[in-house]
Image (tube, rainbow, N blue to C red; front, side, top):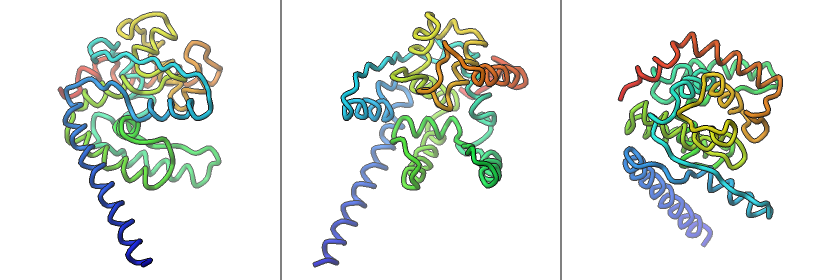
Amino acid sequence: MVKRLAWRVLKGLAWALGLFLALNLLLVAFFRFVPVPVSALMVQRRLEAWSTGRPYAARHTWVPLEDIAPSLGVAVIAAEDQNFAEHFGFDWQAIEKAVQHNETSRRKRGASTVSQQTAKNLFLWNSRSWTRKGLEAWCTLLLEAGWSKKRILEVYLNIVEFGDGIYGAEAAARTFFGKPAKRLTPSEGALLAAVLPNPRKFRANAPSDYIRGRQAWILGQMRQLGGDQLIRDLEG
């Protein structure tokens, strides 16, 4: 009886996993061309608010990459993933450096690429489990195989969390700076990128000294990476 029950559980899990992987394939193909209306992270945040009885109003407006200031794309690449144009989803050098750093430091450092973050935000839940990490790797490979770098960046900039209930460049630009994402300055783009390690703690329109320091560093890295030309050079 126990063996039969265990077999049924394993069979059910296998079916669920297979369905999840197949659904990922379909969604990656679908969202290669279609704007993303909602992400898994948006759903998770809404459920968290509902479970605690907290009022929650999400702001999210999809805009094409052409309607987002190139400097914001450069800023997030400078801050989060400087080898974005070269890697196939995973920056192994950054991963190795993060492992070495975390062995000797109490402040942990991550090494997730823009591709990994896009996969996680779009399809998965927020946690540090090995199961989530394994599924994230699968979804990342699907994005890299099925989308161009420009498409990955476009989706990332449209679904990334910039604040509590604020998703994507357009909502962030209008909330924090009162303007469309197309008119963001390099300084404002660097501020938005600076809050990404913890967007529900830091605010781009009320930056702390720490965020101002990150902004200055990001602006310097943006210049070294070639500025807006970096976005124009991405594959189509």
